[in-house]
Image 1 (cartoon, helix red, strand yellow):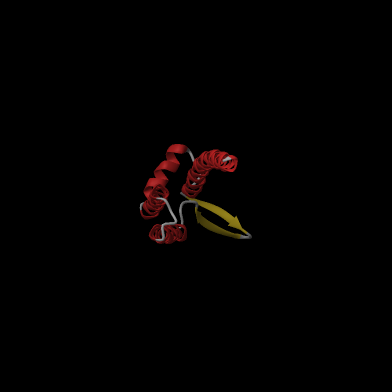
Image 2 (cartoon, rainbow, N blue to C red; image 1 turned 120 degrees about the horizontal axis):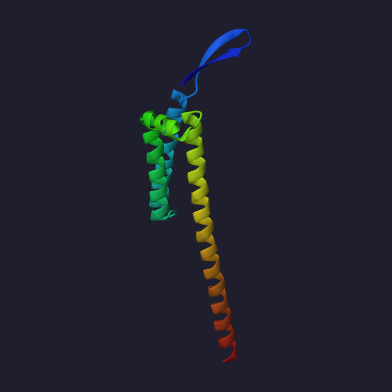
Length: 130
C-alpha cells in the first residue's frame, strides 16, 4: 500500500509494506541463524528438537521475504496496517511462545534436579550410617 506524507514543505510517497531492505535483512539473518544452528549441532551444544524449531523459523522468514505476497495477503485478512507490522507481530508472538515452552522445560528440569539432589543426599546419608 502506498501512502502520501508531508515532510517539511515537500510531498513524499511512502510504501508502508515490506521494504526491499527488510526482505534482504530477513534472508541474511535467517541464513546466519541456520549456519549457527548447524555449527551448534555439530558441536553437540543444541538438541535436535530445538534445531528443528530454529530451522523452521528461519525457513518461514525466508519464505516471507522471498514471497512477500503471503505477508501482504495475511495483513489484509487480519486488518493489520502494514505487512511489516504483521511480520514483527508474528515474530514476537512466535518467540514469546518459544520462551514459554522453554520456561516449562526449565521448570521440569529444576524439579528433576531437586529430586536427584534429594536422592543423592539420602544415598550419602545411608552410606555414612554403614
